[in-house]
Image (cartoon, rainbow, N blue to C red; front, top):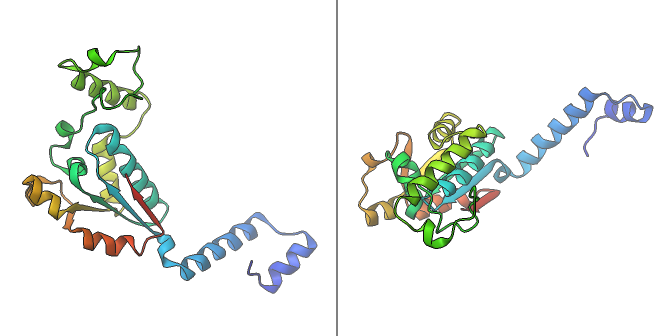
Length: 193
């Protein structure tokens, strides 16, 4: 640990105050960031487009940005649904595709595959999140944009799925995998969700 002469003297005399400790930690963190600028960057790939898989990339991205990291989320394949203007309609959860999904009572697969179960399961999940005061997807997207998280739509996937730039929420950037890889290779934290 780097120390100046005054800090060393205070430590020997046992007079290190809480402010001194905070200052020392702050200096060490600043020093670490200067040594490794990638420690301030997080890159996240969101590839799934269901309600339950929309939360992790947005929660992690907003948390990283709130911690002072330069954060980008690359939405590809079904992950594009998260940033689509109609995300509230597109993001659903299928109980058949989620065997670990907690249900109020055990439901056999044959019942969970009946018509109407996807809207019911989606409503249940939204209700459960609301009961526990978890932000909605819309609120997380707003928070992400407000704190500077880069939301990047995969242009190749847009073309494959027939999407236009106008199909997405405001603030979305558009780029290919190579553009995102440029960000990711300079990041300390890279996640595929």
